[in-house]
Length: 157
Image (spheres, rainbow, N blue to C red):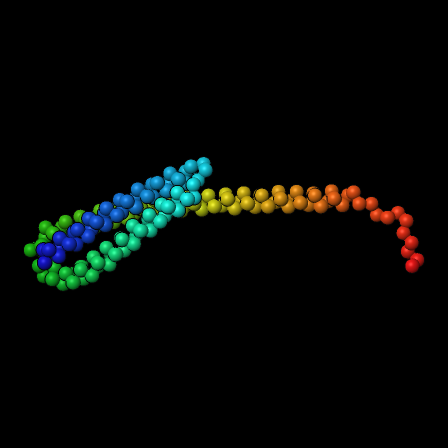
């Protein structure tokens, strides 16, 4: 039983390491988003790195949940015996939750920045289309202005 509780603690510690990496990647994304000339390739690379970390996190979560379900029944009757390990698990879970909330807040800020970036890009595209259309319309009008209708036309045919 103690070995299994140690495994749960190790799982949570690994989760903390992964969450720290996710925090770092989110901070790097924020830096990329703050640049005047945002590098979409760097941003995408960070998204891919985060995706890999999230996959590992999901695997750890599922393994933790399976093991915890098996142990929870036995722990309920012997809480005093395993009080030290339970306290350690509670501390680790609190740390994981704190980091998760921090990451969610950072992700929300990054999402807002990304949406603002793409809104700006759409506005630039829209303005470019308007400019192109205006230039094309001007060209069409100017090409027609040199055309003179025939002055003598026999309409009796």
